[in-house]
Amino acid sequence: MEEQSKPTVSCFYTVIAVFWNKFETMAMKLRAYAKINFGLRILGKRRDGYHDIETVFHKIDLFDELEIAPSSTLEFNCGSAKLPRDDSNLCLRAAIALQKYSGVSKGARISLTKRIPIAAGLGGGSSDAATTLKGLSALWNLDLTVHELHQLSTALGSDVPFFLDGASAYATGRGEILQRLDLEIPYWILVATPPLSISTAWAYSKFIENHQPPTGMERFTRAIQNPAEGGMQNDFEPIVFASHPEIKQLKGSLLKAGAVQALLSGSGSSVFGLFERQEDARQASGQFPKQYTCSLTEPSFNPDLIRSEP
Ligand code: C5P
Image (tube, rainbow, N blue to C red; front, side, top):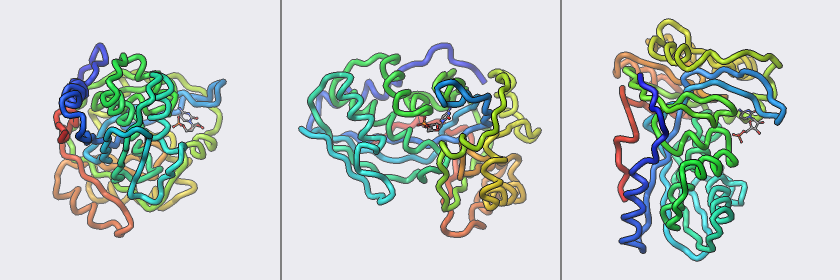
């Protein structure tokens, strides 16, 4: 496991920008990947109302699809009835923030195909927002720096900056202070999401005031390398399990099905299990009621090595 010394702008988006300049009439298709949290500690409440946390974000093989095409106005459409269409929608908020910041008067037609369950601890909305920022920067030929994109994304949500670049990161602060990681996870990751939405703001509001120091990146990531030792913890588990015992049962089912470790992702409702054998993971996913959403990520998955179609 190596720490990357400097965040790099994905060359993928540079390629998109070049491609875009050549074929201006075509829409670009982008993938917005979901994440899980390999552990999450709440370190205490801050003066600004947010909480300091310590976590490791890790992208999994589950994604929303964004199609972005030129238009004179800003338009958004999505097949999912659960998403707001007004400017509380994170894609539109990202687009409006970018218009305001850069002073462009151009629009875009943004179409979102939603696959990541909503309010499920998988960062779907944040990933859509980060991907919109990057896609529109390319469409509008904005030459934004990593710092500018980071500032814009932090204003949209605490975990939005993570989705700008890289497959895994150790995060502190609100979740926006990132140290990129090269994580090779030698397990099948099964994510199971019950038909339950959990508000992150609600989950934080139930946290009993307590200040603790961070573990530090080295110790925190060591627990990920040895999941069977049980060192990974998520401080939202006692809060969420107390109100939703079925999520605690879900974690128990994953462990019973052979997961070496199972943990709540973010503030839930998703729980992921790490499996040594694909067969065990597949069998585990087959046991859940049909209202549950399951996704399976193969060992060493890294979305940076996959190119979405232009
Ligand atoms: O930043 P984001 O919009 O995702 O956060 C949603 C809500 O979750 C915030 O309004 C805040 O109440 C809570 N939150 C927090 N500490 C964090 C992240 C979020 O208290 N680090």
